[in-house]
Length: 383
Image (cartoon, rainbow, N blue to C red; front, side, top):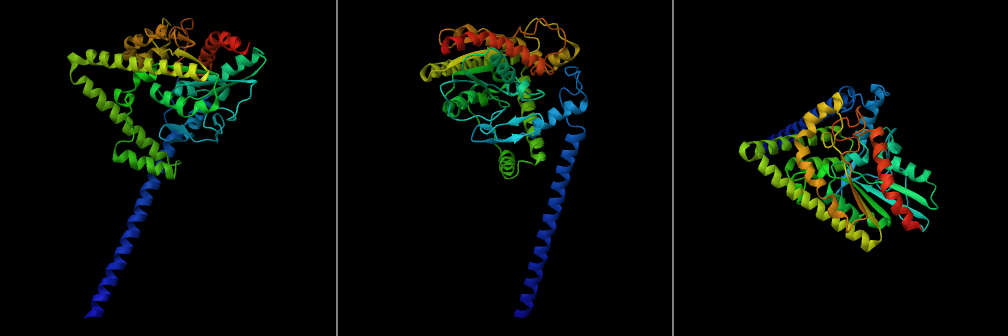
């Protein structure tokens, strides 16, 4: 009897092991299929916002797609803020030894170096730039070097996708201060308007079981492209839910939006005043630039820009004026502040391919204006 029981147990154990192995194989096949499909889609048909745009008429589709693919390959970590993994290099995109876009830098700074950090979101990081030198930071570096100042100038691109004033403030406090900056430039505004009040008040992105699984798996193997797609789908789903909640009461929609915007504007203003005060305490200048979006100035929009305006920025333009109304409030405490909403008014061709992001030409125009504003500040300090 005992022998029979032992044989039955062995059969069940063997069968169980076979089932586990079978399930593992099936799961692996499914995961491999999803990952292969995701990579194939991204390679052959993945979205690239300016692929069909006239914003890069001098580049062919392969070159434009290479810019998109390189940007997608850049990995980030959460510590707890989102930061770039250091030492990443593609054909058009480089992340340096401290997680900033551009060439390597040292933590120490000698007396003959003037160090500038530009903080912001993907517009600052350079979404769509053909290389590191054609971001706003890259062009600004070239302008200041051409000035032939008696010191070494470092312009460091600290832009990270989806950053807004809360994260930018924490980045300054927790990381940038260690580099002893002489100036911090904020290219700011729209990300604060586009970010929900929940995140403005510090609610973490990773709040669900799905988020936790994605995050943990991503830490083990950040090369898995399927995880990035799942995260994007989830983010889009959340955004749709938020829009539905606002639209559920049509009569109160504009009122609710206005009240929320006012709170966002106040948070944005308070945080940058705090950063300017931090600059006074730590001997660095703080300059704030309110970024342009399609429809915020008097530019005659191209066909591409008008399409992007109707789809992406039209709903924001009126509320964005509230950010502009705060610019003068920085005068007494910050080194300077300037409204750039009208900077592209003299250009009739496409500058912002999706209503928000600029490519090389737009970055150069922005950098030239920033250069005019900050040069007198730099000269007064080095003299």
